[in-house]
Image 1 (cartoon, rainbow, N blue to C red):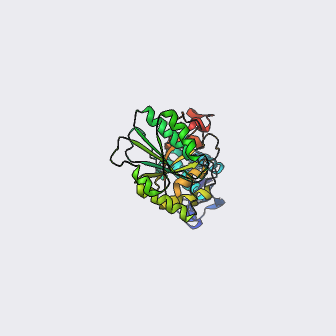
Image 2: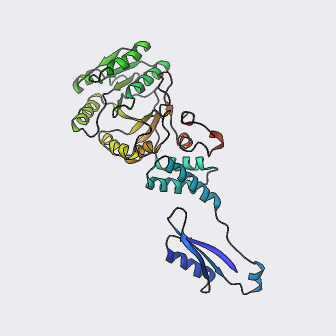
Image 3: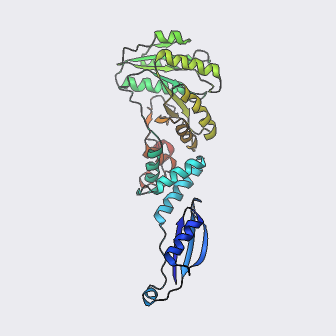
Length: 331
């Protein structure tokens, strides 16, 4: 008896493959969906009649276990991280066909295909940078980290705070700028902000910390947009890790409407799920910028890459990153 398995998108197509290869006398042993649920697999057999066929005794094609194991490993990791089902299918399928040496590198290849990455170069960024985002995401700490990095790079700094309504908003950033010997300018209205941004000084790192905005509040988003326009700054969204994927996907669309192109992830040291940041990147889409793995201002932001993000999502499937925690993987 000769046994073979056939995989095709539909049952009809799978049966056509059975008949074409084994003939009309083929017997169906089993049929059903593949592990990913996207295709149909039929196992069929045919009796042997010739001496040459009998020499082979029982012939069964081996499964491609490497591909299936990679796809399933990636899929399980993404499910754990609460990634949207459609994105899970897309990433795991690309990973399975990447030919990478292990599941982590396979996921990295898939991430590189689907998402964009654009890290900040604090030492040379010419345009003013405006940090925007919802409440509690850590914009002020990110502003302080960027000022610290620029100071260490011996770059002149222009620090501006628009967070004048929150209790302690200005004072929090001023505590850091005073240590660095930087004057902090406070601004309330878009018209005033325009006066304090020097567009003819690309040698300066100009950081603008804004008040938290509710993306569903039209008045707040309009005020933020007018500040972006007045300063001609690049708005960079700051989001905390561990956020709900569906909520953050809704939010980022509104920030995308006012010109946000990339985002910084904070609180990576206390998050155990990355589904939210993948949803944020996919929706608009937004480019992954940098990541904060510590609340300490002296600890600089870390660049994020497809490989570091893949290691963060599945740290136990790469020999080089076994047992690493999120804070190590992000580095």
